[in-house]
Image (tube, one colour):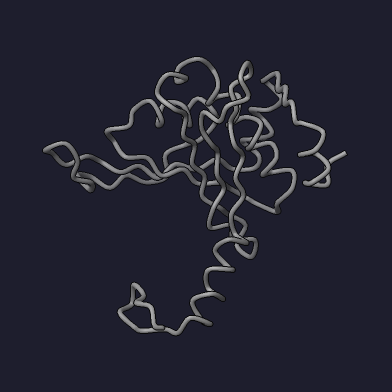
Length: 165
């Protein structure tokens, strides 16, 4: 069995499995649950974790009926705290399409700053949209955290699996 790669080369299964293992090991995910039903309503993810250079990418998704109710903001704050506390990161990136103004507003409210903007970069819904690269630096996180009441409830079994006291 051979698999295609982005560089158009063909690799075998063993090399693919090794590369996939590196991808999985460079990802951390938190599932966002509804407080009442404990049903999953979204997730927060840290991916492309690069400990050598000290950065990672970050994304958040909340199901439509639960948006604008504070679930995303609470999850973002808790997960960023976890990321900066448990990984040696200097900064965390969020990449946002211009058509997703709610996501852009959420990360900007949580201390991210715009580092780059690609104009008319993404085609969606009949037109081109800008693409934003935003970053939160460790010192910016500490400043935001000191001004924000952060309450993170982590289930006991999750705490034990993550090795958190």
